[in-house]
Image 1: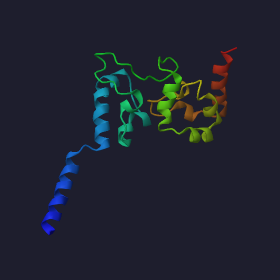
Image 2: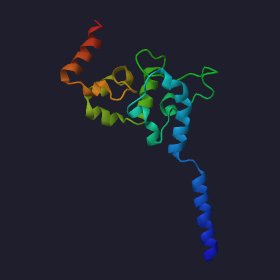
Image 3: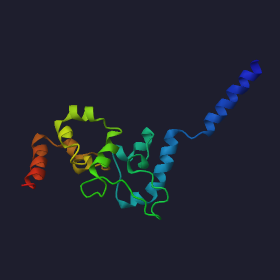
Image 4: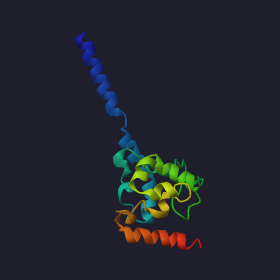
Length: 150
């Protein structure tokens, strides 16, 4: 009985060692993307190191299959994106919960259906510049956007 128990423990350990961890799988998936895309500029900050959290580039941008050969559609973020705002924000809301965002700043709730998160936030720099703005700077962003609508 003892030998059977020991054998099952050894087999379990071997299987666990062979299985790729979610962290390793995320890093492997992101490595494929970064072969080309890190050439497009620096990718720093929390969204560039998501592999440490078990996520990959595809967690936000979608699974591109054989991209770029077949030019699969990529979920892009920002004001110039071809991706609908609702789709962009749904991707962000997978990690950034709307209730927490609403509590952090009322503007999240007001703009969630009209403006993409990346219209205000920058996703890949070392720090998000908007997080460092004081109240006057944030108000100026409002004026910049809403002033141009008149």
